[in-house]
Amino acid sequence: MPPGRTNGRKKNVVAKCADNQFLVDGLLKASEELQARDLGGGPNFKAIAFSRAAQSVGDYPLRLGSGHEAESLKFVGKDTARRIQSLLDNNASARRASASPQGLDLPGCAAASEQFASPPRALYA
Image (cartoon, rainbow, N blue to C red):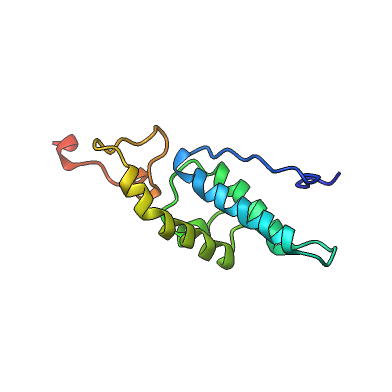
């Protein structure tokens, strides 16, 4: 069986950054829905693209903050980036509602903008 094929089984991708797991799940769900609708018998390239993008998002160690940011990942093009932005927009209110009062993040899961931010000046004084 060629790599990437699941032989009808659901592909299980676990994100390295837990904050991206809903994106991985959303892309895999979209891929499965496209495969289910395809009656032509040939490969559904959009479904394959979503599945590959889900793997790339899952491998990304930082929290994705936008579809534009996701475009830098392998297998994420403009259409997939728009889908990711849609998932982020739809999930934003749910994330705010379920966020802990302390606002704790998982280790190694900072947003890319936070990861490369300059340290406070007080450290250099």
